[in-house]
Image (cartoon, rainbow, N blue to C red; front, side, top):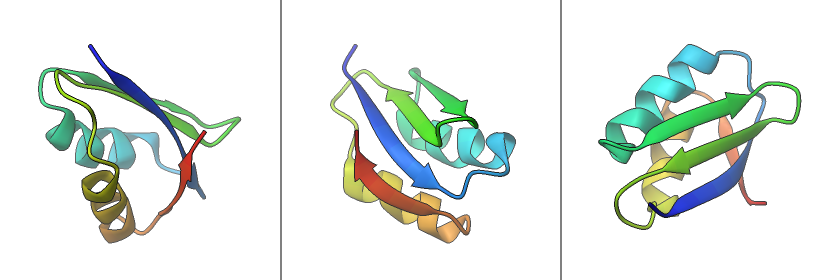
Length: 67
């Protein structure tokens, strides 16, 4: 499964980001690391950075790019 390591700041609510990004990842997964601000997204297809950035923004956070 392809995965992306992304940076999203600030991260203060793991559950929110896991939920909103997880809806895009489908059967894949989302792992949020509060210490680094990294979000790892695993999905059946290549994760769509633009779609992920949009849902992260709508949740009140900022996606700062791939790591």
